[in-house]
Image (cartoon, rainbow, N blue to C red; front, side, top):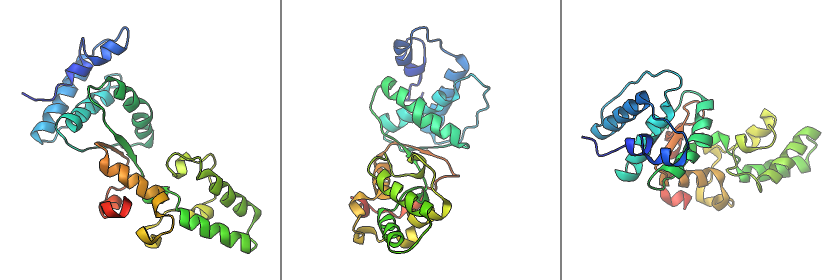
Length: 225
């Protein structure tokens, strides 16, 4: 018998039913959640096919979070679509934070080139001011310099505009140009801040189209403290 009990959260009289008036349990969802919990504990593979309306996201998120908080496991949830990734991190997980018995940390893992490099932005802006770039390029670099003070994570998706590809290529974080601890902006670096959160989080939400966990594999603790 599994030690993980997703029914205590999803089932009749569970934690979600206590939060939502009129909440109705779904047998298919409960069966899937129990199967996922069993697969996690027994370290076996599981394939589930379920139709629309079953509540698949909660059926795997709840046992995954329980595994992270009660068994001390780190769980990676890999999504096929970016829309689902955003749904999990913006809607489902925030709700489950209010329903789960223990606190947990979840991180949306993005590829390195999704982040602004502060040092490269400084250099690109200095070059633009000393030369004669197009007006649009200089405007966008100046706008990016302003955005770094307001962005949540320094990623391209968090900007209030989409820069030209040539502008983004000039400022994006790049392992080949990274100075690590020698960088004057190291402590402020958005990528290394995310790396710190990634290694301390218990639940990682990943989309293979946007991120590869191997990018974080060689980031040692000393590099991002």
